[in-house]
Image (cartoon, rainbow, N blue to C red):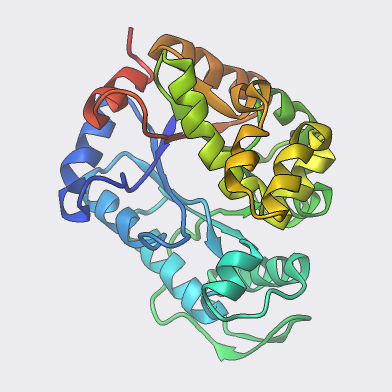
Length: 318
């Protein structure tokens, strides 16, 4: 595979120590580092560290929400990263979820499709350096112009789950960012985006041959995400609704223990890559074979120490 990324920052490593980790990722053959943004580090600062630590790593946000920054600030941060890492930064944006937007950031989660569409259109204009004075359907920007010229405007990717947003990514962005899906699901999702687009997928990996341990860790992650409305709807569309109904029912009743127990092994095995390092790399390759162009590992706890895991999962490892 041409690209092979990993999610940063690593939770148990202080940010100040990440510079050496980025250099090691580069040495091991990782081509990309991508960040998320929920309730830990923000999506841009770890990438700024990576930009100066390595001259080769590709950098991306997967993703930053379109609601939690004003359009101008989002353009400014994207432009800053594009200047720090010319030709190496990609801006991934998405609607995020009602939990992150409304509960944690006190912002109404209204018309997510339109807000993402309008933000992409604004960013396309703003990152060229032109003055933007426009009324979009979900917000208005008056007289904004970036104060520093962007020599190479970054590609813009859209986080997408179901057909509407996937088609928006294909129509108005440079690619789509996928999350919490199986290698087989990729074959259903990618055609909705259309040809010629980058497909980034965050792939959850628990590199251990202790299947019970991997499934325990995987169930925690699945319950945390797939009970959020947008992810539940995504898996209904993928056809996984009957398999997840027991979890959803128990979760709505407030029985977290039963919700975890209600997740079938085959669902965990489909959504969380586990096994030996070689088996994990082979499983990631299936995502690529089905249409992912930039696989991005998200390492879950449960295996060896982090340094060993990163080394063992590296693309050139034996």
